[in-house]
Length: 215
Image (cartoon, rainbow, N blue to C red; front, side, top):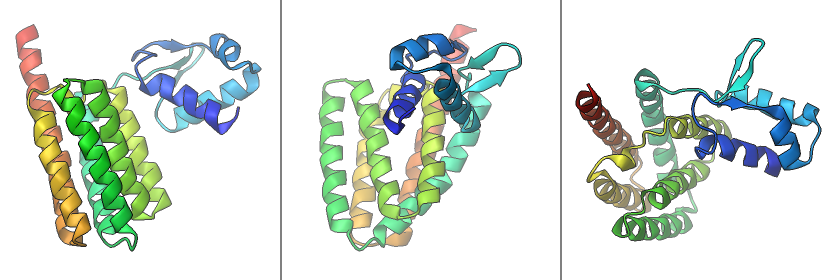
């Protein structure tokens, strides 16, 4: 399976096309990608190692169901990783181009929020943070952080669903950009960590309200 086909399979899991708890069958994927079972199984095994699938004995691969406890752990880890990435990005020699790219993404996010397109906003949010991770210049950090982002997407419970949160997040993104542009490493780290923490807290309050309404 080529890298592009592997990425397509990963996106099928993360995008919601394959719902949490659903069985991932090898044969339909073989037909979709025009491949034999061996490379498809290898790709599924790789996704299982990264936490994007779970293997149940004698039953096969399934999309994991990410619960509230999982979300708390993932956000806790992401706060640290995003903080490190922002600090390193603020020290990046080519940060002028990074700031221009982040500003462009922020402008696009602002347009999506104005259109009430939360899916578009959320997709761009991933891009925003990936740009900072790339500029951080630490391949291991990028790999681990993107794994966290992917597992949060599996939870389907993003902070974009929280009323008012996307608008607040835009302000926080602008503050992070300003700190990176000024080369303020400690400030960039503090703001990035605060941004993730605010997202996590807003989501937790929202899910608690939803649970109370359902009970």
